[in-house]
Image: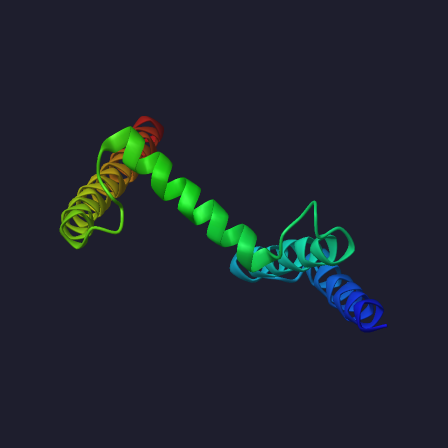
Amino acid sequence: MLREDDLKIQTSAFDFHRALVANSGLTEESFKSAQTNAKDTFYDIIASLRPWEGKSSAARKEKESTSLRQSWFEAFGVDPNDPAWQENNRRDIEKWKAERNHNRSDAVESDRGRIDRLRRERDAKIQSRKNNRN
């Protein structure tokens, strides 16, 4: 009886999350959050119906996290939870973002320069037409 009640509650929560995901007025962040919640609730329903097949969303997330950390360590030889590595990585990310922002500002300046050049060419054509009329 308790299992049936849990299943009804989880199914209702899943329907609610599906309705949120279907809402076209959500921001991208809200959509991703609603989508994640819907997936988590779905996995909880599967775990309730078939405990031998699935795990709860919390257990699934923990397994995925452990697997990812292990794969990262095997591939790169460093633990992503190592504070020294995190600090070094944070500095690299900040440096990359600063370079990217600098490159974007250069592109904006070149666009502005192009606009100015096109305006000068347009003004020169207008002046040339005026001179030809006179």
